Length: 340
Ligand code: CUA
Image (cartoon, rainbow, N blue to C red; front, side, top):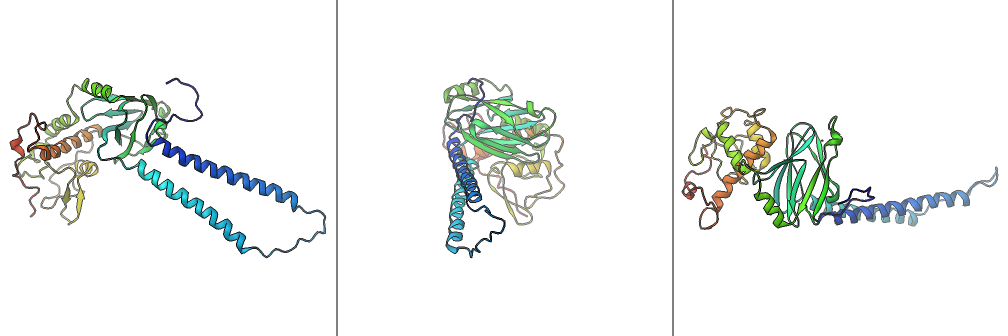
């Protein structure tokens, strides 16, 4: 991709045309309205200007017909903007279920990227063409904004929780990533590149790196190191809930509410264990890990918990699944969270 000053960003994601059509529509409506208003101002100023000092204008009673017309037409045009905009927005923020997950952590002043397979990189993102990619965004420090203009993707990256964007890249090439939220001295240098590769090239690239094992394996290591495994036993009830199969499930809490065990819940439970207590368990049993784990570590731990869920559903007859780990471990005992 040659670096020239472009009037308009490239159109390199499946969502981009949809965003552009809406944008062009908004621009067209604005241009038409601006022209109409300025033309009317000019014409009326000339036509109805005061011609002599003692000219007394004719009183005008107004016209209901005219007023209703100029209310209803803009109203309908704005309803179109609203409906269309809502659709584009909804599509832009609803990743398909089968999307490939990549994790990006913003940190003064770089983008740190992790892939489930274990690769890591900084300020570079590799994605397959033609496949939906979901990016889970986290911030290690302040508010950043993850911006890929050629994909029409932009989202604030707010410390303390996860944000999410997704796209399907449609053209191989290299595309700019920017930080679009002033985040300190080197904000303007917080830039990177997305590399869109053919699916085979991407698979090869994935296979060629990540000496530290998958994110889930890195998470498992942390799980041992931090001592999580002494209370969260895998197959029998320890002092804390069994985590196998938890990811994505409904968890009953001690106040009678339920919560879906997604990324946000797991993150919160690691950093602020007392915030939500599983029914049948107690407060102050688990210490907080705030300050002991980075955002990247948290994502690895989440991938690990997620992998515990995958094994459970995959075990039985599927020949490819769980090549190494003994399937016997998941055979049914250890019911989820004893309740009282
Ligand atoms: Cu990060 Cu601006």
